Image (cartoon, rainbow, N blue to C red; front, side, top):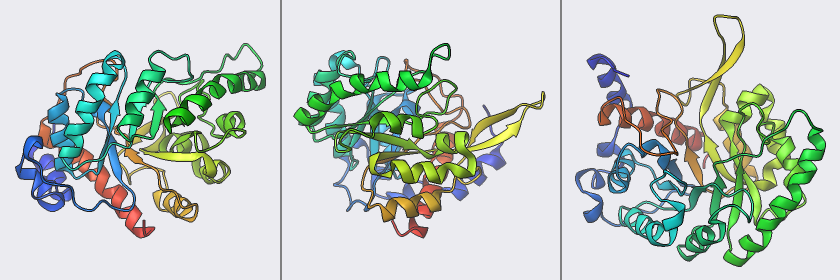
Length: 325
């Protein structure tokens, strides 16, 4: 993907980077970063999969310069932190991140239940570093040849296996609400039917407002109200519906503020519920999704990359200010 010089200048002008957000950190590497300023009431982070075109150290430096408060590190095969090396590599990643003035309150994993590979070593390492929240990057799926309600019921014993582990390590799983066809959780209510009997201190949701809107349109708020006690973390992306050349309705992800999501209303609901979990931005527009299966090549300049993402961050923070969060 390429941009004209005029487009780059427009993006940079609209999205102040280090000079307006972190003037000191913008001039220093992660090895010489100053202590972090007092964090906002709610911290906004970026998922690290978008930075898998570069090293862990460089990713930290870029995220700090863009003005984020936190990083959600990817502890999955092909991620910056390989699960089999979590005891060694997660502490190092967290130490460098915190040295740069950023928090690590949540990680991405492939954990679905206690039998998932490396589940206990990952939770043990996270707990030792004060990280409470984790989400899975793999999703429960419907088999449309069988009864769907029975499949939801069958998930409960699997999820129950994480209760003891989470209580042991003082962690909480946040199942991601992903709208891809066949995913359990895209409708919100279906995954709530599975987890509603569990303690939300250890079993909850990573509520994705973009995916919730993709499935439910303007009716997303009813589902959000129902699952509110189980929303432990928040994922933000924007989405819109469109007709393709064949006349079929589809969804596409767009910069925050250009699509259908109503962040101000969501933040008002979260404020009323006294939400205090991590907030992470996911970038799935402008070909910036990245890869959780290994490195990928960035097809634009670092400056373009940072301008696009910072624009989303500033849009999110503007809506937070409107809701007085």
